[in-house]
Length: 288
Image (cartoon, rainbow, N blue to C red):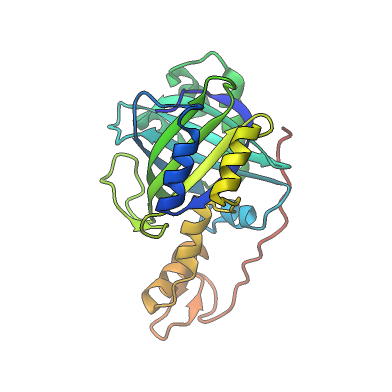
């Protein structure tokens, strides 16, 4: 498991590697990076979004500022396992993360509106930074209707640098997603986002890449790639063309229903009447 850090800012550079490229990269970093002592861990995430996927739609537009909300666990938790409720923001290429530790049942209850902010604060495992909880609560209230929309899991190997404590390299494989049974405590499984043998490598650093690492990447032929796990899961949802999924899209993304002839309409509107779904303008609600 990665070293637990609840507040940090860094650059994250992603690379898609086939099996041969991954082997060569790992060979190139073995004398410079330290494997995580816990070995491979399975990371589970629940991504919260509005019913019309406002957060991820905006993120895919590649704005200068974007943000996400997720619940994360290392391994399959039970309701009493400590998990991480996390905001992830990106501004001008720098990723900022702010998160609090809660039992799974408390984090889920808070996000579902079953407990309020004050009660959530009382249940935080480490209350050393109350400002993070306030920011999370502001985020939640700002969007107003956040739901658990996508479950994502993957197997991760992490490496750390002795020379630069901010430098991390992770390799994710078996990246899977699903839009049903969106719970950290549920069984694993889902649809693959990567081709067989592929891995997603992420280099995370607060400074410039060291020259030795640049040389390794150049020798292997690795090139930065734009790859959002949640974004690709969302694309998988909306790009399906079968009739069943068309109904799913109208019902779950646009909040509309189809009549027996496949005509979409909204409850309370005239049958078949069009109701537009503007993406709208997005204004960051908080400064970094």
